[in-house]
Every structure is written in structure tokens, then in C-alpha cells.
Image (cartoon, rainbow, N blue to C red):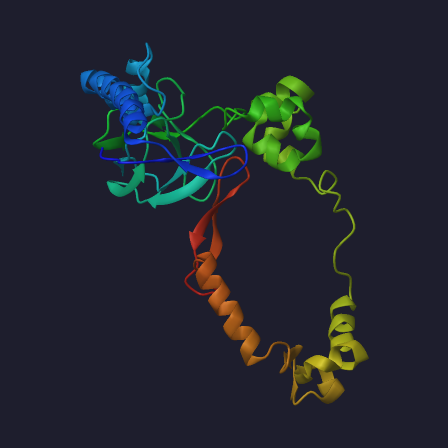
Length: 315
């Protein structure tokens, strides 16, 4: 470092130029301290500081481990079972769907980090796929070390034969705070064991017991004779719907301007305008909306499998 003079600010706020002699003496002291620091750094302390930002310590091995943990890697999931399956990221709650795997060898590859955990369920429902020998659901945890990994769901993986079981590790805490009472329909299917332990609701795992009209509070029919006619007539005649420009294409007896005799068919020509439609389509694309789904076969739990629709036009 070369410096001929430097400036000090006195109490009066004036700058006074110090002599070279004082300057050189001061620089000598600064240089000696700096040299000592550099010597220590050359022996390895600077390397530790760059890694953890707090210098060398007895925790250097820990710091090295943390560095490895922060290294990203790829993980490939391979489904050898006969079931179409959903891969979920274990977020500590009920999981987040990240991919769908076809049965018989379907694969997907994702970027991930050490410590991330994943679980696999039957597609369209949250019914876990388990080892038939142990009835343990398959979970996959990314280890420390980096590189490419492959998680394989074996060919024998299948839904559990135990009717009342928990599908998530969080089920017990959810049941403990009252989730089985607050949200019984969902909890009894997905957290049946915990709901039975805390509330004695295990018998409701049987869909024929759980899904009666009395339990669903559906003893009164949703529709009665004439209620559908009344609904269409209100659409055709009430002032509040005129803003949507309703037109009756077909109606019983051609009432309310029906062009054809037959069941009720109506159009609302100004329900949405072109600008609103364009915004809806764009919003759906940005949110990642996918093709509509239909209900597939009913499972033993009373759930229906979700299948991609081949007829519905929504997306």
C-alpha cells in the first residue's frame, strides 16, 4: 500500500495533513496486523470463512455436511406396479402432487434436495400404495451426497387391505385437535385409524354405513316435481336475468318463446363477453389448469378414481 499522506478530522471539523513520518509509522502498524491476518488465512482460516461466514471452529465437519445438503440433484421415480400412481412431495401435512406415473414402468424425473421426502398413492385418490408383506406405505427420502437417484415402486406394490388406516403421518395430530368432528367426511376416509382412536369413528369406514341419506342429511329430495320447470321459467322471465340476454330454444309447449317443443334448452348470449373469455383462458393457462376429469370406478373406500375426460370441453 502506498500512501504519502492521510487526513484526520479534528473536533473542530477541520482537516489536517499529517506528516509522512507519522503516516508511514501508522501504515507500518496496519500492515503488520494485515500481514498477520493473511498468514493465518493462508493456513486455512480464510477457507473456513468463505464457507460458513464465521471462521474456523470445531463445527467445520458440520459445515461441510451442510454444504453437501444444499447441493441439488435429480431423482427419477419408476413405477413397476400395475397401478397408475401419483407422486407427492411430503410437506409435513397432506402432501403436494408433483407427477403422475403410468403403471408397468412409467417414470418421471425431478430436481430435488437432500432431506426431501416423497410418497406414492393410487392415481386419483389418496390411497397409499404399500408393501403387501408389511402393509407399510412406500416413502422415499433423498439422502445427502448429490448425484442422480432412482426410486422404484416395486411390481408388488398395491393398496392396503386394511380398511381403517391412516394415510398420512399428520393424521394423529389432526384428529387430536378435533379434525374428525370438524371435517368427518374427509378425515374418516383419509385418517380412519386416528379418528377411531380419538372419536370411535372407525365403523364409518364402511361406505354403506357412512353414506346413508340420513348421515348425509339428504333425506329431503333436492328436486321435487315442477321445481326444474320453475327454475327455467325464472331464467326466462325474471328481470335479474335480462342482463344476460336469455333465449329459449326449446321448452315444454313452446312456452316463453320456445322455438321448439321439447325439454328446456336456453342460451344466455351475454353471460360473458369476448374480453372476459380471453382473460379466463389466459388465467387458466397461467395457473396451469389441466383437462377436466370424470369419475372412474368406485373403490372399496367409497371414493371414485379420477380419470381424464374424453368428452367434456372444459379445461
